[in-house]
Amino acid sequence: MYLEPSGFIGAAMAVQGIRDATVILHGQNGCRKGLLTGQRLLVRTDERDNGFYGRDRAIPYSNIRPEDYYGGTLGKLEDVLDHVSSEEYKLKVVMCSPGISLVGDDLKKALSKETDAMVMDTGELPTDCPSGFDSSICRIIEHLHPDKGERIPNGVNLIGLSIMHKDWSSYCHELSHLLKDAGFRIVCALGAGCSTDDIRASVNASFNVVIDPMYASRTSEQYETEYGIPSISIGECPIGFEGIQGLFEEIQEVTGTRLEHGMSMLRKSKRRAYEGIVCSGKSLKGMTFSITAPDTTKRPLGAWLESSFGMVECDDCPDYLFAPGDIAKLEQASGRCGKGVDIGFPSSSGSAFLKEPLMGMEGCMYILDALFNRRDGRTRPRGASSQGCAPCGCPCR
Image (cartoon, rainbow, N blue to C red):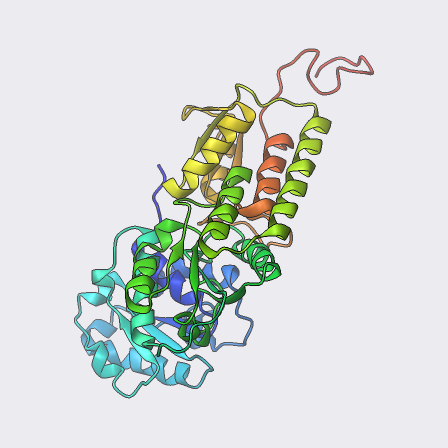
Protein backbone atom coordinates (compact mmCIF):
# COMPACT_ATOMS: atom_id res chain seq x y z
CA MET A 1 0.00 0.00 0.00
CA TYR A 2 1.28 3.47 -0.92
CA LEU A 3 1.17 6.13 1.78
CA GLU A 4 1.36 9.63 0.34
CA PRO A 5 3.80 12.04 2.04
CA SER A 6 2.06 14.18 4.63
CA GLY A 7 1.25 17.87 4.66
CA PHE A 8 4.11 18.28 7.14
CA ILE A 9 6.56 17.01 4.49
CA GLY A 10 5.04 19.24 1.83
CA ALA A 11 5.26 22.34 4.03
CA ALA A 12 8.88 21.67 4.92
CA MET A 13 9.86 21.07 1.29
CA ALA A 14 8.28 24.40 0.32
CA VAL A 15 10.74 26.11 2.67
CA GLN A 16 13.68 23.99 1.52
CA GLY A 17 12.89 24.99 -2.07
CA ILE A 18 13.87 28.58 -1.19
CA ARG A 19 17.63 28.85 -1.48
CA ASP A 20 18.20 31.34 1.35
CA ALA A 21 15.62 29.84 3.72
CA THR A 22 15.71 26.84 6.02
CA VAL A 23 13.43 24.79 8.20
CA ILE A 24 14.52 24.47 11.81
CA LEU A 25 12.96 21.32 13.20
CA HIS A 26 12.17 21.42 16.90
CA GLY A 27 11.99 17.76 17.77
CA GLN A 28 13.66 14.39 17.74
CA ASN A 29 16.15 13.20 15.17
CA GLY A 30 13.76 10.48 14.02
CA CYS A 31 11.18 13.05 12.93
CA ARG A 32 13.77 14.54 10.58
CA LYS A 33 14.29 11.36 8.56
CA GLY A 34 11.52 12.03 6.06
CA LEU A 35 12.98 15.46 5.29
CA LEU A 36 16.52 14.37 4.44
CA THR A 37 15.79 13.97 0.72
CA GLY A 38 15.59 17.77 0.59
CA GLN A 39 19.39 17.86 0.54
CA ARG A 40 19.41 15.87 -2.71
CA LEU A 41 16.49 17.75 -4.28
CA LEU A 42 18.07 21.17 -3.75
CA VAL A 43 21.70 20.70 -2.81
CA ARG A 44 23.24 22.92 -0.17
CA THR A 45 26.99 22.54 -0.35
CA ASP A 46 28.10 24.78 2.52
CA GLU A 47 29.88 23.15 5.42
CA ARG A 48 27.58 22.66 8.40
CA ASP A 49 28.07 21.92 12.08
CA ASN A 50 27.18 18.26 12.53
CA GLY A 51 26.01 18.98 16.06
CA PHE A 52 23.04 20.91 14.68
CA TYR A 53 22.63 19.39 11.22
CA GLY A 54 23.87 15.83 11.35
CA ARG A 55 26.10 14.54 8.59
CA ASP A 56 23.56 15.20 5.81
CA ARG A 57 23.70 19.05 6.04
CA ALA A 58 20.01 19.20 5.16
CA ILE A 59 17.98 20.55 8.06
CA PRO A 60 19.06 21.90 11.48
CA TYR A 61 17.21 20.40 14.42
CA SER A 62 17.08 20.66 18.20
CA ASN A 63 17.64 16.91 18.69
CA ILE A 64 15.33 16.48 21.65
CA ARG A 65 16.05 13.40 23.77
CA PRO A 66 13.85 11.71 26.39
CA GLU A 67 15.70 13.36 29.28
CA ASP A 68 15.04 16.81 27.79
CA TYR A 69 11.33 16.47 28.51
CA TYR A 70 12.13 16.84 32.21
CA GLY A 71 14.72 19.61 32.00
CA GLY A 72 12.97 21.68 29.34
CA THR A 73 13.14 21.53 25.56
CA LEU A 74 13.06 25.22 24.72
CA GLY A 75 16.71 25.76 25.60
CA LYS A 76 17.83 23.36 22.89
CA LEU A 77 15.77 25.24 20.31
CA GLU A 78 17.37 28.51 21.40
CA ASP A 79 20.82 26.94 20.93
CA VAL A 80 19.95 25.98 17.35
CA LEU A 81 18.56 29.43 16.62
CA ASP A 82 21.75 31.07 17.93
CA HIS A 83 23.85 28.87 15.68
CA VAL A 84 21.71 29.26 12.55
CA SER A 85 21.63 33.04 13.05
CA SER A 86 25.34 33.07 12.25
CA GLU A 87 24.66 31.53 8.84
CA GLU A 88 23.52 33.39 5.74
CA TYR A 89 19.81 32.55 5.82
CA LYS A 90 17.31 35.33 5.22
CA LEU A 91 14.36 33.28 6.46
CA LYS A 92 14.20 30.67 9.22
CA VAL A 93 11.01 28.67 9.64
CA VAL A 94 10.57 26.79 12.91
CA MET A 95 8.44 23.67 12.72
CA CYS A 96 7.61 21.39 15.64
CA SER A 97 7.55 17.64 15.31
CA PRO A 98 4.15 16.14 16.24
CA GLY A 99 5.51 14.89 19.57
CA ILE A 100 7.08 18.16 20.66
CA SER A 101 3.98 20.13 19.73
CA LEU A 102 2.25 18.43 22.68
CA VAL A 103 4.80 19.92 25.11
CA GLY A 104 3.51 23.41 24.45
CA ASP A 105 6.80 25.31 24.16
CA ASP A 106 6.37 29.05 23.69
CA LEU A 107 8.00 29.27 20.27
CA LYS A 108 7.12 32.91 19.71
CA LYS A 109 9.00 33.80 22.88
CA ALA A 110 12.04 31.89 21.63
CA LEU A 111 11.87 33.84 18.35
CA SER A 112 11.22 37.23 19.94
CA LYS A 113 14.77 38.43 19.14
CA GLU A 114 14.75 37.00 15.61
CA THR A 115 13.74 39.44 12.88
CA ASP A 116 13.99 36.91 10.04
CA ALA A 117 12.23 33.93 11.61
CA MET A 118 8.67 32.64 11.69
CA VAL A 119 6.74 29.77 13.26
CA MET A 120 4.91 27.30 11.04
CA ASP A 121 2.08 25.88 13.16
CA THR A 122 2.16 22.22 12.10
CA GLY A 123 -1.13 21.54 13.85
CA GLU A 124 -2.95 23.73 11.33
CA LEU A 125 -1.36 22.24 8.22
CA PRO A 126 -3.47 20.24 5.74
CA THR A 127 -2.94 16.49 5.82
CA ASP A 128 -1.93 15.93 2.18
CA CYS A 129 1.46 16.85 0.72
CA PRO A 130 0.39 19.19 -2.13
CA SER A 131 -1.89 21.22 0.15
CA GLY A 132 0.84 21.36 2.80
CA PHE A 133 3.20 22.84 0.22
CA ASP A 134 0.56 25.29 -0.98
CA SER A 135 -0.32 26.41 2.55
CA SER A 136 3.33 26.85 3.49
CA ILE A 137 4.01 29.09 0.48
CA CYS A 138 1.01 31.26 1.36
CA ARG A 139 2.20 31.70 4.95
CA ILE A 140 5.70 32.60 3.80
CA ILE A 141 4.31 35.29 1.49
CA GLU A 142 2.21 36.64 4.36
CA HIS A 143 5.26 36.71 6.65
CA LEU A 144 7.49 38.47 4.11
CA HIS A 145 4.63 40.90 3.38
CA PRO A 146 6.08 42.19 0.09
CA ASP A 147 5.39 45.79 -0.89
CA LYS A 148 3.57 46.11 -4.16
CA GLY A 149 5.48 48.21 -6.68
CA GLU A 150 5.33 48.86 -10.40
CA ARG A 151 4.07 46.03 -12.56
CA ILE A 152 6.84 44.17 -14.41
CA PRO A 153 5.88 44.05 -18.10
CA ASN A 154 5.65 40.43 -19.24
CA GLY A 155 6.88 39.36 -15.82
CA VAL A 156 5.95 35.75 -15.06
CA ASN A 157 5.91 33.67 -11.88
CA LEU A 158 6.05 29.89 -12.10
CA ILE A 159 3.87 28.55 -9.28
CA GLY A 160 2.80 25.05 -8.29
CA LEU A 161 6.27 23.65 -9.05
CA SER A 162 8.09 22.10 -6.11
CA ILE A 163 11.44 20.43 -5.57
CA MET A 164 9.43 17.25 -5.01
CA HIS A 165 8.39 17.12 -8.68
CA LYS A 166 10.63 14.75 -10.58
CA ASP A 167 13.75 16.53 -11.85
CA TRP A 168 12.04 19.86 -11.24
CA SER A 169 15.13 21.87 -12.20
CA SER A 170 15.29 20.44 -15.74
CA TYR A 171 11.66 21.27 -16.41
CA CYS A 172 12.00 24.71 -14.83
CA HIS A 173 14.99 25.40 -17.10
CA GLU A 174 13.14 24.17 -20.21
CA LEU A 175 10.01 26.23 -19.64
CA SER A 176 11.94 29.32 -18.50
CA HIS A 177 14.10 29.21 -21.62
CA LEU A 178 11.08 29.01 -23.93
CA LEU A 179 9.25 31.81 -22.12
CA LYS A 180 12.31 34.07 -22.14
CA ASP A 181 12.75 33.45 -25.86
CA ALA A 182 9.18 34.72 -26.35
CA GLY A 183 9.99 37.95 -24.48
CA PHE A 184 8.83 37.05 -20.97
CA ARG A 185 10.84 37.70 -17.83
CA ILE A 186 10.87 34.97 -15.18
CA VAL A 187 10.43 36.81 -11.88
CA CYS A 188 10.11 33.87 -9.49
CA ALA A 189 9.84 30.08 -9.55
CA LEU A 190 8.02 29.97 -6.25
CA GLY A 191 9.37 27.26 -3.94
CA ALA A 192 11.52 25.79 -6.70
CA GLY A 193 14.97 27.29 -6.35
CA CYS A 194 13.90 30.89 -5.76
CA SER A 195 15.20 33.34 -3.15
CA THR A 196 13.32 35.48 -0.63
CA ASP A 197 14.09 38.52 -2.80
CA ASP A 198 12.47 36.72 -5.76
CA ILE A 199 9.35 36.16 -3.64
CA ARG A 200 9.20 39.84 -2.74
CA ALA A 201 9.50 40.78 -6.41
CA SER A 202 6.89 38.20 -7.45
CA VAL A 203 3.99 40.42 -6.36
CA ASN A 204 4.85 42.77 -9.25
CA ALA A 205 4.66 40.12 -11.98
CA SER A 206 2.04 40.35 -14.72
CA PHE A 207 1.06 36.67 -14.80
CA ASN A 208 1.36 33.41 -12.90
CA VAL A 209 1.86 30.18 -14.86
CA VAL A 210 0.52 27.27 -12.81
CA ILE A 211 2.49 24.06 -13.29
CA ASP A 212 0.66 21.69 -10.92
CA PRO A 213 -2.69 23.10 -9.73
CA MET A 214 -2.74 20.86 -6.64
CA TYR A 215 0.35 22.68 -5.36
CA ALA A 216 -0.96 26.18 -6.06
CA SER A 217 -4.68 26.34 -5.32
CA ARG A 218 -4.45 28.82 -2.43
CA THR A 219 -1.34 30.49 -3.81
CA SER A 220 -2.94 31.45 -7.13
CA GLU A 221 -5.99 32.78 -5.30
CA GLN A 222 -3.81 34.83 -2.93
CA TYR A 223 -1.89 36.44 -5.81
CA GLU A 224 -5.09 37.32 -7.64
CA THR A 225 -7.05 38.74 -4.70
CA GLU A 226 -4.20 40.60 -2.97
CA TYR A 227 -1.99 41.62 -5.88
CA GLY A 228 -4.24 41.40 -8.95
CA ILE A 229 -2.08 38.83 -10.74
CA PRO A 230 -4.07 36.41 -12.93
CA SER A 231 -3.06 32.75 -13.19
CA ILE A 232 -2.70 30.70 -16.37
CA SER A 233 -3.53 27.03 -15.91
CA ILE A 234 -4.70 24.01 -17.89
CA GLY A 235 -5.99 22.31 -14.74
CA GLU A 236 -3.33 19.59 -14.75
CA CYS A 237 0.41 19.09 -15.23
CA PRO A 238 1.89 19.57 -18.73
CA ILE A 239 2.60 15.87 -19.32
CA GLY A 240 2.64 14.43 -22.83
CA PHE A 241 2.74 16.38 -26.06
CA GLU A 242 -0.93 17.36 -25.87
CA GLY A 243 -0.48 18.74 -22.36
CA ILE A 244 2.55 20.78 -23.38
CA GLN A 245 0.75 22.21 -26.39
CA GLY A 246 -2.30 22.98 -24.25
CA LEU A 247 -0.20 25.02 -21.81
CA PHE A 248 1.55 26.91 -24.64
CA GLU A 249 -1.79 27.75 -26.26
CA GLU A 250 -3.26 28.90 -22.96
CA ILE A 251 -0.28 31.20 -22.33
CA GLN A 252 -0.62 32.63 -25.83
CA GLU A 253 -4.35 33.24 -25.43
CA VAL A 254 -4.10 34.96 -22.03
CA THR A 255 -0.99 37.05 -22.68
CA GLY A 256 -1.38 37.71 -26.39
CA THR A 257 2.26 36.72 -26.97
CA ARG A 258 3.21 33.97 -29.42
CA LEU A 259 5.49 31.18 -28.24
CA GLU A 260 6.89 30.55 -31.70
CA HIS A 261 10.15 28.98 -30.53
CA GLY A 262 8.30 26.80 -28.04
CA MET A 263 5.90 25.54 -30.71
CA SER A 264 8.80 24.90 -33.08
CA MET A 265 10.67 22.91 -30.43
CA LEU A 266 7.50 20.94 -29.70
CA ARG A 267 7.16 19.94 -33.37
CA LYS A 268 10.80 18.83 -33.44
CA SER A 269 10.33 16.86 -30.24
CA LYS A 270 7.29 15.09 -31.71
CA ARG A 271 9.28 14.23 -34.83
CA ARG A 272 12.13 12.81 -32.77
CA ALA A 273 9.66 10.72 -30.77
CA TYR A 274 8.02 9.40 -33.94
CA GLU A 275 11.33 8.38 -35.47
CA GLY A 276 12.41 6.63 -32.27
CA ILE A 277 9.14 4.69 -32.04
CA VAL A 278 9.36 3.60 -35.69
CA CYS A 279 12.98 2.49 -35.26
CA SER A 280 12.08 0.43 -32.19
CA GLY A 281 9.73 -1.74 -34.22
CA LYS A 282 7.64 -2.16 -31.10
CA SER A 283 3.94 -1.71 -30.46
CA LEU A 284 2.47 -0.97 -27.03
CA LYS A 285 -1.12 -1.52 -28.12
CA GLY A 286 -2.99 -3.58 -25.53
CA MET A 287 -0.20 -3.43 -22.95
CA THR A 288 -1.31 -2.52 -19.46
CA PHE A 289 -0.30 0.27 -17.11
CA SER A 290 -1.11 1.60 -13.66
CA ILE A 291 -0.33 5.03 -12.19
CA THR A 292 0.17 5.88 -8.53
CA ALA A 293 0.17 9.67 -8.41
CA PRO A 294 -2.04 12.70 -7.65
CA ASP A 295 -4.88 13.34 -10.12
CA THR A 296 -3.10 16.27 -11.79
CA THR A 297 -0.34 13.84 -12.80
CA LYS A 298 -2.36 10.65 -13.25
CA ARG A 299 -4.97 12.18 -15.55
CA PRO A 300 -2.71 13.62 -18.31
CA LEU A 301 -0.22 10.73 -18.17
CA GLY A 302 -2.98 8.14 -18.45
CA ALA A 303 -4.70 9.99 -21.28
CA TRP A 304 -1.42 10.16 -23.22
CA LEU A 305 -0.70 6.44 -22.80
CA GLU A 306 -4.23 5.50 -23.90
CA SER A 307 -4.69 7.90 -26.81
CA SER A 308 -1.20 7.75 -28.31
CA PHE A 309 -0.19 4.13 -27.69
CA GLY A 310 -3.43 2.20 -27.23
CA MET A 311 -2.44 1.05 -23.76
CA VAL A 312 -5.00 -0.12 -21.22
CA GLU A 313 -5.18 0.84 -17.55
CA CYS A 314 -5.05 -2.16 -15.21
CA ASP A 315 -4.17 -2.23 -11.51
CA ASP A 316 -3.54 -6.00 -11.34
CA CYS A 317 0.09 -6.79 -12.21
CA PRO A 318 0.42 -4.24 -15.04
CA ASP A 319 3.14 -4.30 -17.65
CA TYR A 320 4.17 -0.82 -16.52
CA LEU A 321 3.73 0.78 -13.12
CA PHE A 322 4.27 4.55 -12.94
CA ALA A 323 4.83 5.42 -9.30
CA PRO A 324 7.16 7.22 -6.85
CA GLY A 325 10.63 5.74 -7.25
CA ASP A 326 10.75 3.62 -4.11
CA ILE A 327 7.33 2.10 -4.81
CA ALA A 328 8.19 1.47 -8.46
CA LYS A 329 11.39 -0.38 -7.56
CA LEU A 330 9.73 -2.44 -4.83
CA GLU A 331 6.81 -3.52 -7.02
CA GLN A 332 9.11 -4.52 -9.89
CA ALA A 333 11.44 -6.45 -7.60
CA SER A 334 8.50 -8.33 -6.09
CA GLY A 335 7.11 -9.25 -9.51
CA ARG A 336 3.89 -7.29 -9.10
CA CYS A 337 4.55 -5.36 -12.32
CA GLY A 338 6.62 -5.84 -15.44
CA LYS A 339 8.52 -2.58 -15.05
CA GLY A 340 8.40 0.14 -12.43
CA VAL A 341 8.91 3.68 -13.70
CA ASP A 342 9.98 6.38 -11.26
CA ILE A 343 7.75 9.43 -11.65
CA GLY A 344 8.35 11.33 -8.44
CA PHE A 345 8.76 11.84 -4.74
CA PRO A 346 9.69 10.00 -2.59
CA SER A 347 12.52 8.33 -4.45
CA SER A 348 15.78 7.03 -3.02
CA SER A 349 17.48 6.94 -6.40
CA GLY A 350 21.07 8.13 -6.46
CA SER A 351 22.53 11.39 -7.68
CA ALA A 352 20.93 12.63 -10.90
CA PHE A 353 23.28 13.30 -13.81
CA LEU A 354 20.85 12.75 -16.70
CA LYS A 355 17.78 14.87 -17.31
CA GLU A 356 14.73 12.84 -16.28
CA PRO A 357 11.77 15.15 -15.62
CA LEU A 358 8.20 13.96 -15.98
CA MET A 359 6.84 17.20 -17.42
CA GLY A 360 7.70 19.04 -20.61
CA MET A 361 9.38 17.78 -23.77
CA GLU A 362 12.26 16.17 -21.94
CA GLY A 363 9.66 14.47 -19.78
CA CYS A 364 8.09 12.96 -22.92
CA MET A 365 11.46 11.51 -23.88
CA TYR A 366 11.95 10.11 -20.39
CA ILE A 367 8.60 8.29 -20.53
CA LEU A 368 9.20 7.06 -24.07
CA ASP A 369 12.60 5.68 -23.09
CA ALA A 370 10.99 3.83 -20.18
CA LEU A 371 8.27 2.41 -22.44
CA PHE A 372 10.32 1.34 -25.45
CA ASN A 373 13.58 0.34 -23.73
CA ARG A 374 12.23 -2.07 -21.13
CA ARG A 375 15.38 -3.04 -19.19
CA ASP A 376 13.18 -4.87 -16.69
CA GLY A 377 13.58 -8.09 -14.78
CA ARG A 378 10.57 -9.96 -16.16
CA THR A 379 11.54 -13.50 -17.18
CA ARG A 380 11.14 -14.28 -20.87
CA PRO A 381 9.29 -17.49 -21.76
CA ARG A 382 11.43 -20.41 -22.88
CA GLY A 383 11.29 -21.12 -26.58
CA ALA A 384 12.03 -19.41 -29.86
CA SER A 385 11.60 -15.90 -28.43
CA SER A 386 13.96 -16.35 -25.49
CA GLN A 387 17.50 -15.02 -25.46
CA GLY A 388 20.09 -17.28 -27.04
CA CYS A 389 17.65 -19.19 -29.33
CA ALA A 390 18.23 -17.19 -32.50
CA PRO A 391 19.95 -16.57 -34.78
CA CYS A 392 22.68 -19.02 -33.74
CA GLY A 393 20.26 -21.87 -32.94
CA CYS A 394 21.83 -22.73 -29.57
CA PRO A 395 19.52 -24.51 -27.09
CA CYS A 396 17.59 -22.68 -24.38
CA ARG A 397 18.98 -23.05 -20.89
